[in-house]
Length: 251
Length: 296
Image 1: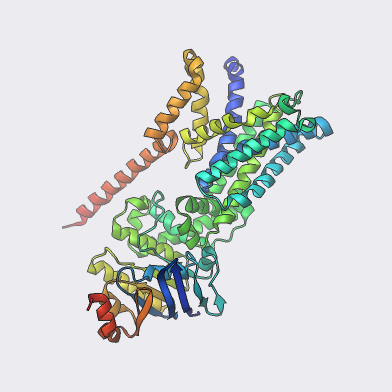
Image 2: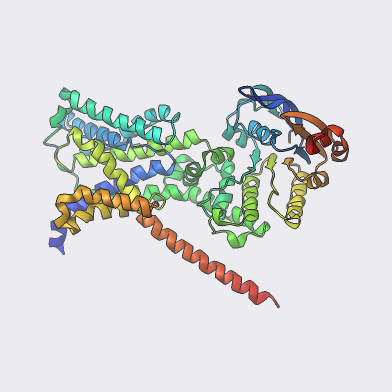
């Protein structure tokens, strides 16, 4: 297990600064928080880590592997998984097919076996379907397995997306506002799961608005404002930081 | 019965040929590549197979396979620049490719016979050959849907960004889809050449592109039966409405407009979707009834 390291990462859109010299560490076995007001650049950070945007400057490493200019699908294969702030599911497809999509990283049947549906490729499909069904069961979603994902309730869609990310058995999990739109009970349920994952050795980055949720779950928090880190450290100390209060509440 | 078959044999043959071509078109669309290059690839397969048999005397079975290989190789080459384009730009670029192939066939007279095309091609492809070919094509397309290839194609078509974030190489899978589709298209070119005695450049032009595309649009783009149903409907229509034969293209156009406006998923897929929604609604009601029954 290795630590995800951002070193002096910057992203400029023309003259607009989306991220400026951001350095972060997301080690395994811990939930690391990333908070900040709207437009602070939190989602930009996730997009930079996952290769969906290119960096203007800086480096991103996972352990000793440099991911700075790696393409998105290779970054995923290196063991990074993410969820999206505005849920992005395969809407036409049933919920279970969405979860099955997450296993792609672990599919290894040969091209020829896939074209001809040889027994090895079909066995792989059966195996993955069974494992997706297990995940649905674990999250109490079996009932919705064959429902089109786009028609599910908002909270359920979030769950499907989370399961899809989990299906890839990542080393690093990037959660972009994973409990937005959930009530406190549902959010707490998810929080327990996040803690379990971290305890199992996963590196989790949690992006959130809800300060209470972050303080309860994270051991370490980074605060972003205007693309710059303005504070970092233990949640309790960070919240008391005058710069953070100013960023959130104004002066 | 036999007489009916003989009377309609040309139509049945046409249906089998065009169903295969429609399935090749379906395959690329499924992987999110908006390519209409298949008309050009079919022409390449047809000309290569017919040419090698007529001029070099190679057996048709071999030259048809070579036609398929050529279709596959050319589409792999074509996928290099195409990977940089998306959506309607892919359609425009591949339509240009179809025109290039057509022009080459017209102007390289010594090789292709120019605008007159190639004549006197032995007819070795029977209805049975076509039937076996279509069965094989259906199997491959079905097989792909059962395995990781189909899952990757579906993911890419629905959301490229998400597919990439799940580790799917968009470029690799779209090239695979394009190559397979090109191979099938090239093979059907050979079948067409050895079925119709002669081929000429204009047969694989814009009209061909539109015809094949309309089968898929009319039938549907998700289920493998969509393209087959679309082909059957569009080919049977002029036969059923003989009095309208004169206005055939008009009727064609009208149907396409109506289908795109009211059944954008295609006739067959809309039907499947309807059955699916009914099943889901029934399951939902059953689950509701059960949870209410459980309550005290």
